[in-house]
Amino acid sequence: MNFNTLFLKSFRVLLLPVALIYGLIVYIRNRLFDRNYLKSAAFNFPLICIGNLAVGGTGKSPMVEYLVRLLQPHYKIGTLSRGYKRKTKGYALANANTTALEIGDEPMQFHLKFPTIPVAVGEERIVAIPHMLQDVPDLQAIILDDAFQHRSVKAGFNILLTEYSNLYVHDFFLPTGDLRDERGSAARAQVIIVTKCPPDLSEEKKQKIIRSLKPAEYQQVYFTTIRYGIPYHIHNSTDEWLLTPRDEVLLVCGIANPKPLKDYLHEHTHTYYQQDYSDHHIFSIDDLKEIAEKFKEIRAKDKLILTTEKDAVRFAKFTEQLADLPLYVLPIRHEFLFEEGAQFNKQIIDFIRNFSFNPKS
Image (tube, rainbow, N blue to C red; front, side, top):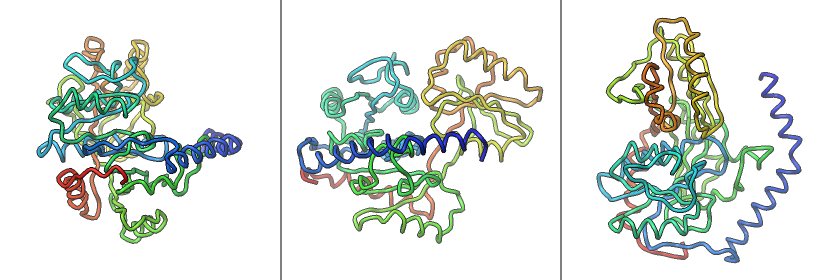
């Protein structure tokens, strides 16, 4: 553990009184919803919610994409996100002229990768859902991105993600820990997915984690690992770069948890250098100049700049400036372990197929 990590952990421990106050506020809020002092709206429509109890990267966006790929051949589906760090307010439905500044980077990523599905944003889901249903009257299901803690809307199916290296049962409230909701809120989920697991996770370790999560009888626990695809050029998806042990990479990213990505590059390239930015960072011309200078300092023959799909949508506006830079995008997907993907897929499809409205559920 380096000095900076040790200092940060020590500093967060000192903030325990703040975390206790925050936890009390979260607890009171949840009880107000539980006892109907604060109201949750249920819609006579299939809503699938993806979320987590902690801040940081548990893989919500790749899970949204997984569900889109699963459901798109069978149903007319759409996605609804908050649109974090966008420059607009209120409800908006993406169109051919939409930019990341208008709807946020993750919704823009969905819009670019799945141009035929409706992608909407809105801070207040309870307001945005009726708008979306009015704008797209043939919708058959909506995927709510990062909405688990937004209890004003009661989804029919909740998928809770928790990261293998930071399970919510071992975490604490912000700012001492990473929890933004109480552990007991996990009871609202029909499915719990432990993400970013080692691909060779043992059955013994799997069962140990399940015991620590203590799922209810109605809850199913799944495990996924990260699968990276072949990097493609940001402005030409047919231009691919197959990483080799000769390559030297300048990694440029502004995501919550880049560690799995860095571990992957450590295993698949000769050397990687990193240019880190804050989560959802909006790149500027000055950033691009800084990146170009750092890339120029790399003396290797086989070198490239690599970024994530989420970051790529914030680079897309720099068409001319990127013309001479080999900026490649690394795709990412969830892969279910223990051959349980088919079981998860069936649960999701059956939820929509057999949907019946029950406002008390």
